[in-house]
Image 1 (cartoon, rainbow, N blue to C red):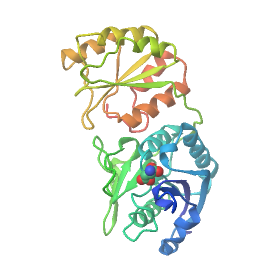
Image 2: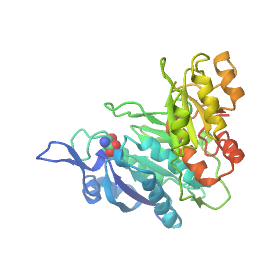
Image 3: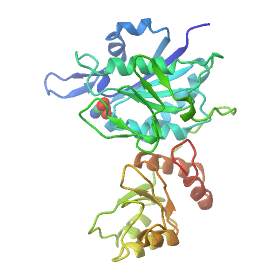
Length: 342
Ligand code: ASP
């Protein structure tokens, strides 16, 4: 059997950074340098090709147009490769992985985001292991010689996660990511174990690559003392179509003050209000307390256990997909890519 083929798509991030001698800051560098730093990459038994974005960036500079560019690259090379590894800064990696999961419908091959906390050239770097294992996983095939991880994932510090369930929780440690509401998809120790029963099921439909996103999305994070009164007018005149409401606990908000009238006004203005919780583990259960029952009766949408990163990118995706308000509501509460537990 021929070697599996994996395409590395390099976007930037710490993994390939070098120190700017004058300023002392880290800045992105080119891909050849990254790959040259790991000669053992050539012994992996995987045929590796690579491509890089025109502009190599720190992931704080990621925009939705970068997500579309990545989706288009995967579309263009989809039939030529068994899997894809996207080298990306960790800061916004969870947003990018979530966005890609929505843009790539019926994905049948692994798309694995990885990066590192220390640049690849440093002696204690985590980049080598992350890259080598991500490449190995991206090239894995089942006994019929086919790719069997049909998901956008993040691989970081020995763990393989469903991308749209993760968030960056640590800026210091090598285990920068966690997935609180869905178990890991795989683990790399002496052997690499993939928990197949946790993977999405392979679709027998062809890949559909979506290439538009609509960024008319805003976020309101509750805190005691928040004055929401002027927000509806502000949103109305800015074209905002989805407001993500980050509520307390299991989806609760105040029943006093201007909060509920302001939410009602937003909904009356045609804005979709999506309720997600500030807790990183657990879910919204509207109706459990009086403080969320009111939101339910106003027509606030239940975001269940969506991560913040998934809520943002899912909203952008759905707004671009359809103009129909009912359909938008329906899709927001539908599990599209394993991003929410219903
Ligand atoms: N600032 C970097 C970035 O996200 C951090 C990293 O790569 O981990 O691009």
